[in-house]
Image (cartoon, rainbow over all chains, first blue to last red; front, side, top):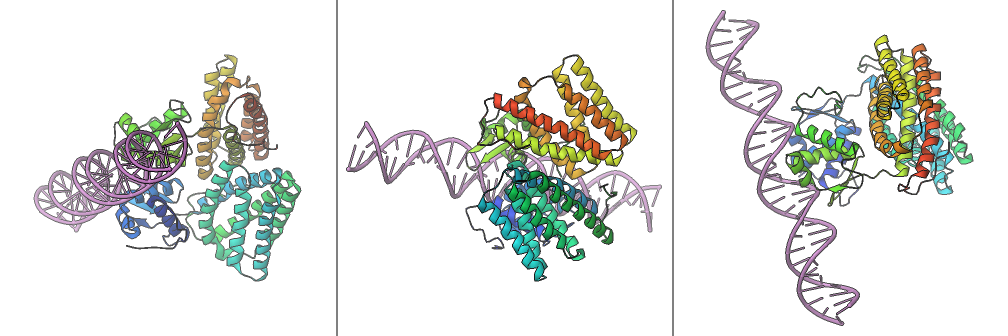
Length: 236
Length: 236
DNA sequence: ATCTGTTATTATGTATACACTGAAATATCA
DNA sequence: TGATATTTCAGTGTATACATAATAACAGAT
């Protein structure tokens, strides 16, 4: 009877949903670290339910690429290799650029602009205060907003998935990162282009930002000792 | 993740896999047309298995965006609205451009180039013979190859999903299409850029091709009478 | 001692059983 | 007749039971 109330979102969710979000949280927050294996029954016991809803949740998690289901041998939290980090970052980059262009082209309303402004301001404040946790959260919020407001549901859904995948690698790379001063400048510039409805500039700046980040990421990965999974650097 | 084996080398598929691919085929080939609803038990009966594997297959199909699971009222094959067609096409476009760039940058080997050449040749032959079915298949093969060979697994997997989604709308738009002479020219040019390892040109041509197709698609959609789902044309 | 064939175990994959929910259908009342 | 309350009922959501396959343990032989 593990009443695990880590998710304060109390609603009329089915047990499958409960299992899904709980396990997802655990994986995203490294409570279940990459490589860890588990048994369906064990998880069911922990979550206080039978195997059936756990199984169904696991299928969704496998679809999201967070766990591997090994045919008769239970499940494993998927490892994040250097290659994965690079690949995920590449896909996310191209989706986000598209989202930024799309968002600018659709001329969002004042309320939406205000949300973006708030996120940028929060990032500036956090950087000033040297509060990297707060900065990271605000950065995440900004990217989420670009994605969610872009007006293309399919794009938003897919990009959101990759943003979450990227979050897992962020945890690995965070200690290696330098002060993200460029990020703030770029985000402000992107926002300005969006406000003007200048789709092309929004895309270009966001793209340049992403490429710079990709280079930095490659340096970080080289300094880290993660499994490389036989991958050569992508050419920029 | 889910080993999407399009290869006919059927090993020992579990019943879940069988249900998944069977239902997927039915939906993709319009045997179960959009909007059609069904009951789990009914499908289980048709497929000669119990509800459990069918349910699990349905979860995956829902994740792929092919069906909607209505909480207590069974499942429905998802409708393809005009908005969906446009959105899917947009995402696929941006992923494919990235894949083309990536592939060119990667300098694929002779064997891989040969596969692409074969597809282009098949397209030319089919166009000459006015065999639109064969053309469509070769076109599909070409796009699959660009995606599968790009070297980024995550990109490939995601793009593949969207290619399949696009396939469904292709069925709707096919009767409205004009002779795809531009496609063949473009594909040949992309292939040439890939052969030279000219990543930028490959991306540009493929992108231009996609944009032209997007315009044509918008015209087609206007002429069709599909549910529009309150969507304005994306700005190009 | 190592290798191999057999048995035993164990967790999954699938089937079935059951409870709960939401809606259609019927009944009751104004 | 129309509106509302009640009942019924079909179908999902969840739990449990069972069969199967894969591995681990073990014994016997070389």
